[in-house]
Amino acid sequence: MKKIEAIVQPFKLDDVREGLKRVGMDGMTLFDVRGYGRQRGHKEIYRGHEYEVDLLPKVKLECVVPDDRVDETVGAIIESARTGSIGDGKIIVSDVPEAIQIRSGQSLEDVL
Amino acid sequence: MKRIVTFAVMLIAVLGLPVSAAAQDGIDTGDNAWILTSSALVLMMTGPGLALFYGGLVRQRNVLGTMMQSFAMMALMTLLWAIYGYSLSFAEGNTFVGGFGHVFLNGVGMEPNGSIPHLTFMVFQLMFAIITPALISGAFAERMKFSAMLLFMALWGTVVYFPMVHMVWGGGFMSGDGMIPCLDFAGGSVVHMSSGVAALVIALYLGKRKGYPSEAMRPHNLTFAFIGACLLWVGWFGFNAGSALAADGLAAVAFVNTHFAAAAAVTSWLVVEWLRDGKPSMLGGITGAVAGLVAITPASGFVAPMDAIIIGLAAGAICYFAVAVVKAKFGYDDSLDAFGVHGVGGTVGALLTGVFARMAIGGADGLVEGNAGQFVNNALGSALTWVFSGVATFVILKIVDAIIGVRISSGDESIGLDITQHGEEAYN
Image (cartoon, rainbow over the protein chains, first blue to last red):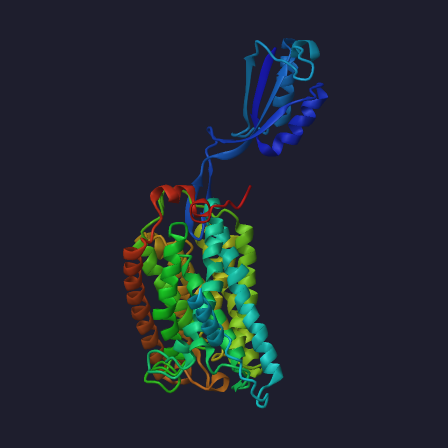
């Protein structure tokens, strides 16, 4: 099993959910996060005083998938979250040694 | 126990002095209705108007503390006013301060004072005594102890505001038949200049907020600030048009002038901001409105509507300059620009009142009508207000600092006023 973490633009969230639904992904966990990469921030001006706002709001979503579904899931996220500009985000894939469904106590490998 | 009972009986006897049920002759019901309405409008300027305006501009952890600074004035100044404030402002006295003739509202009842009941006049003036100290709180936002704030305000009201009212409106040396008669229709010097200069002194005395100006201190809720500013605009009709003390033509002039100046100042602030910073901001628009309302305050019953537009245009641009350029250059932390808007706007308004006053409106001519003397008087009155409020504020701060300490601890500042001063949070 793999965990897929994707940090995307907040305004792309609906597109990403649609994209994931199309490849049969029907569960995820979302976080509102802030961060910056090469996009850096933007400036805001209040009564003539300029502030650099460098931590921008992003959405991070996480899901766990069987190994054989990683490629299509990642592909769906890239396709739906991409605008082509700096700041589109990142996808991180990592190994998950164990994942358990609380209700049944079963391994997620058997459930998914 | 017996002593307590005796004291309570005495207190009831003093506080419960029957309001004299004089004849209603000489009272104009239309005038009375308008001034009572205006009184309510002016109270609305402080709560919720100013509380929302200032509360929206601070960071999230200080919103309740900031609102409380305005709201507390609605209680504190009311009690001081009832006990001795009205007397020190309007009772017979010397040229600087009123006497004790109206202590505990002695002799203030339903009988006419002009064409309205004396009580109506008293309560209308009270609303000004509430908002004036509340305005100062914009300068010490996010870093003053609540206890020190209360003591400071009580002393400032007593030593600065009540005498200022007496000097300009209560028969003192800056009143109509005084030594230096200044034109101040609704409080350019009494309210805005006195509080604005006090704001500058207190900002300098307290020093900067932790992290200012390197850390971004963005307003936490500009929609609050917007609602507050719009309530101020509406309330200002009571402030200025109510200052005619009658529902007459002068009230209509003041009403129109108030509105025109606000609109003009919104425009000039936004134009300057658009040119200099690249974008016209909502915060800029509402701040411009307040600057225009401040500047027209002393002039509202003395100038014509087209003059009001000029005054508004000047105020918007000059206050922008004070807030965006002068403050940055000198580096003082007038956190919510109480000085930049009220001190500077009030001074602009007082000077321009001396320029544009017209006999046909308020019974006095200014510079444009060939009466340079009035301009000189208004300039002199402004200078005296600056010096008086500045020096007195500094002395009061020293005293409060010695007794309580004015500034919250560095740790409390990081946690915020809401939790450290009031034990509550705004958003849960």
